[in-house]
Amino acid sequence: MAAPRHAFFNDVIDGNDQIEIDRLAKKLRVTKTVLAFASGLSRDAVSTPLRLSARTTQSKLHDLVEILNQMLPWTGSAAQAFLWYRTHPLVSFGGRTAEDLVKEGRAETVKSYVIRPRPPGCEGP
Figure 1 (tube, rainbow, N blue to C red):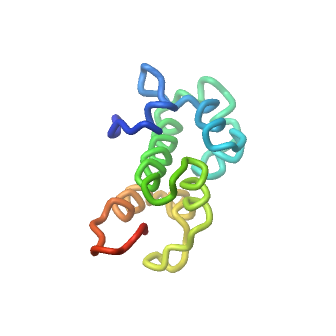
Figure 2 (tube, rainbow, N blue to C red):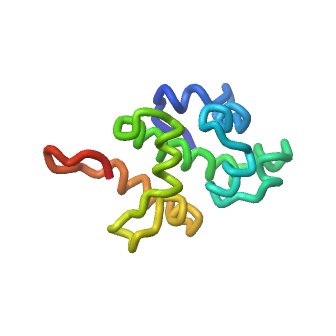
């Protein structure tokens, strides 16, 4: 599950490669419930310590963080990257957002989309 180490990623991960939900929520200026919903998780998955440490929960949170990391150069901040993730319609995917696709189980598709090469002068996805 190890992801590339970016500054944002380092700020929200502990020594066991686990996403620290409180740090992530603070950095994005949202509640844990909002993070759960945006990741396709239940509120209990991010509120109960045993569920928070579960592989499935951590995998979904890692996917979210990896996507946000890729968006930082275009958005300028973690909060703006999260706003893009939740609201920006992706024409290539019928106007669905990155959040919609992640909830459909297509996180890998979103990660591939945000890291794809772009023509010169093209800014952001």
